[in-house]
Amino acid sequence: MTVAIVGAAETTELGRIPNMSQIQLHADAALNTLADAGLKAADIDGVATAGESPVAIAHYLGIAPRWVDGSSVGGCSFMLHVRHAAAAIEAGYADTILITHGESGRSGVGRGGGGGGRASLPAQFEMPYGPMGPTTMFTIGVLRYMKRYGMTHEQLAAVAVVQREWAGMNPRASFREPITVQDVLNSRLIAYPFHLFECCLVTDGGGALILVSAERAKDFPHKPVYMLGSGESVEAPMISQMKDLTSSQAFRIAGSEAFRSAGISHGDVDHLMVYDAFAHLPIWGLEDLGFCQRGEAAGFIEDGNTRPGAKLPLNTNGGGLSYMHSGMYGMYALQESVRQMRGTAPAQVPDAEISVCLGVGGMFAASGCIVMGNVAP
Image (cartoon, rainbow, N blue to C red):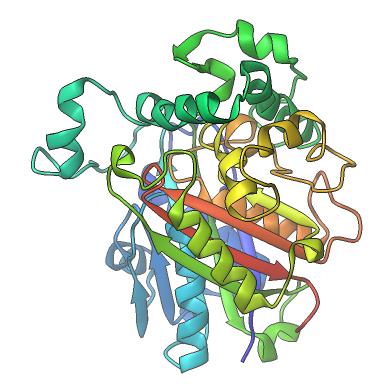
């Protein structure tokens, strides 16, 4: 049995939404997605979410599900939810599954606590050395990559420049004004080598998806988007303990499994989304997915191969650097893949039939990868 995404929408607003709590953002996204699919809450019999409990979401929306998933592994949790939902539908555990996300990342209204407390591994073995979250921890791998492969500051800055080009075509993007490599390098230094424009936005927002069996897809208002393949994996809870600071084991496993299960090769991919909380992540993604050889992805982006009109359109909504980033970005990457496959994206890739969406969670601790297509397999 093949599974299709028949509902997809984000919150009514993105950016700064101080008048809505986090669970209200989940609900706003869910209601918009139900409307997109022409469904009511009573039609839903499966719920998956992260950041909030599926118990809270089902109760808030008045849903009585017979399948739930609260897997939470960071920003790629929603890729895992899509994969798990497809398996649940194929097993007959649910027929119509809603996946929700909402996060008051900027306003902090109704936002829950995070982290594992003082007993967590990072708190014991990394925090005593003074890092302050992802901005400082991600620098470890970037500095190693620069030393090993010779990546320049200009090449890292080029990631933000190219994604701003895509954002310039997206009316809902937070930042749309064009920038240059020099603009990026002149922006405030946050944690060496990251400048401000190489770091993700901090915003409010949310999104949701609805999945059903492909046999039912013709009964819904919009062009169905088929799930062709998927993969997931985890690595280390501490970035300092990665097997290789310049490559993500979780990316490699999730990506190769997604390509294998979809039965596709790299030449079949028309569109690519790689979670970009910071500018280096698309570089790791391109290499770990196998689109570039080790050490070549920074030059690949700098040479314009992922920009509008180029051979591998990447992060076409503007990404976490220019579109929006509420904290758990994976849902927004999935939304853009769906838009591209529906043919409704603001920066639409002509004739795109296959999209690959790669997510990361917890600073390389986890990954999920989804392959979507707009032609039934």
